Image (cartoon, rainbow, N blue to C red):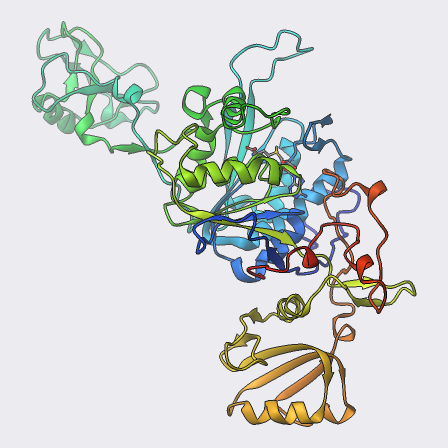
Length: 557
Ligand SMILES: C[S@@+](CC[C@H](N)C(=O)[O-])C[C@H]1O[C@@H](n2cnc3c(N)ncnc32)[C@H](O)[C@@H]1O
């Protein structure tokens, strides 16, 4: 992104890119649902940090991404704000798209939904990130069919979905089954034994001398020449064989301009999707709202901008197959996750607002238990099954104390710290059942161990004895005896937090640019720095409540 190009979109702040902290995700088992082995993930938090948290495990793994970000229309919806300064919006989208691209599989595709407000800007921005050659198309979706009579100029009836491949050479979009409407064009007025057919023009819009000749109708002997500036699609010999095979149609009375017969049995049973999606085949905004109202008939406030399940279903059909991983980082009311689940895809959904709990969780529970029979359920014969895990983003690993020094956040217990250090250092967190110091690995022989205790020479010697030949260990600890340093060539000892300084931005809780308010700042109590003190104060920190809240946490990710 930073390399200057001949043609590029610039904006204030474009060159500023945050060095994100790779956070851990903490499962909240009380909100997880259904199959305990499910790999589906519902993440509550800012999507920039959440995407960064996913990057290590899921880079190159996601087959299909759909995003429906706030369109920057200037509206204040019940559940989220949708109007920020244009440059900030571009930065916000750019930062997320860069990681989304990284998460995509090499043959993956991304669908970005947008309206007129930012469409052109998003197109240029996405060209820069994905490469113009990887742009597949823009789909125009008819979001409503009624005319809004109080529109000042034009009554808007459509939105766009920009479609990009990660690598156009590897990407493939699935085709759609032929519709009854498409098949209805096929008839059999001459009782052809080969079955129903339709006819197409016989001329091409180019005058090729060898293909300009009169065609004589066998029945009426009427002669037909191609219109001026055109020629027939076939040479004379080929055309005569087509007439002999009864594949040229001159109309019921034999008088009409000749046309080529195309039999339904000769055409593929599926067709490529077009770029025009009308409400009859892909639903409309009101349909999306009705689906939500049906799921939550007693809700005081209906989510303002849900997409209809049929729209998402069509996109996921094009971009993925059952078993593929689908991601939506602006999950809203949970439509993408619900549809992906019903279509047998694995999914990851990220939502910052509280509607992650009030809408997404109950909606997805209904999907899992099969009681959601709205949306695409009937079409895919959905009966229920599966589950999902619910995660919160951990707070920042380091916080500044009252002297401005970075210290480990008191919200981190020993397990969280071990998981966070593994992630920071690029290790997979996976504690060994027998050897306590094998908490994570980066290769078969490279391990990491994090301890909050004081590392002594005696401890180091014991660990060293347990290590097999060829193994290496990184030990991260708060304190260690000077003699530990360089005692073993295959054991490296580092001090936290010193070893982390300057690596990324700590203490930044929210990259959402206030699109959604994270906390009620006024009522949030003071942050209490690490150190001995009143225990009751320690959980009273601003921001998301994690750590102490969840003593039975099932999984750190
Ligand atoms: C247009 S809505 C998506 C609607 C969704 N497609 C549906 O069918 O319900 C955009 C969503 O993005 C969420 N959002 C905005 N900024 C976010 C951020 N930084 N991280 C995660 N979600 C965010 C908003 O809270 C809102 O729910």
